[in-house]
Length: 150
Length: 150
Image (cartoon, rainbow over all chains, first blue to last red):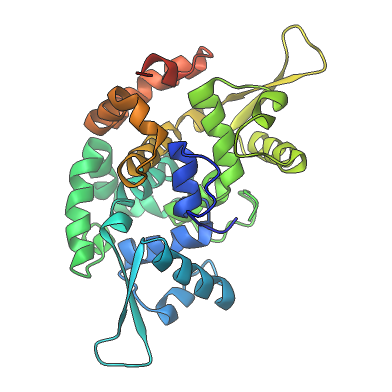
């Protein structure tokens, strides 16, 4: 199902978040790339190891801008490129991504989250506090993970 | 994309949670129905307002059992029915659902979460604590939301 807030099936809060963005895995991977890896262009997203199809990536970027999760701006120096960044509405999804990380850390024996134990601990202790710090880092174009890689 | 842990595309913790369960909106709605509405049979899930197609519902129930999120048991009195419940691995997804709820509460003006403000406040203050209480209620077959409806 493509993310959309038009023709919403219900205002159940779980369903709303799914229809807006979270029910589409490729959309969530774009958010992941921005928050954890400081990616910001189509070409950078395309290199993700999960393997975006070009048409899916392009359509999701359009939808995420339309639904107010991403903002699209022209690249500072390369006029052929667009730069994508999270809006405040998009940044507010960081605590959800962090809870997903805790779940995978617990249930995937090979989780890459085990390489960032200090961050996992911070999220477990106070997701809200570390999310606010992360939002500020992402606003500044930084990637949270590199500060915690062991 | 159907949820599966076979052929995992990466052990990134966000991707793992997406591939295991969260990247499929119908799977998440089944979890929602169990946690918030104490549903437990195919017939009960089928009545959800978002409108499950019968084949999708059936396939997702099979997958969620296979991936260890749900347990299937025979109904106590009606041998034709199965009863689905969350495993501990499935119960561990409750904090993720709660963060989704907070996001929708903030960004959907018509969110039904506005009818359960006391619960929203508890999640905002300490997701981990209220999630543990909720897990216990869900294990006992109770539905958290009815305790907070204003």
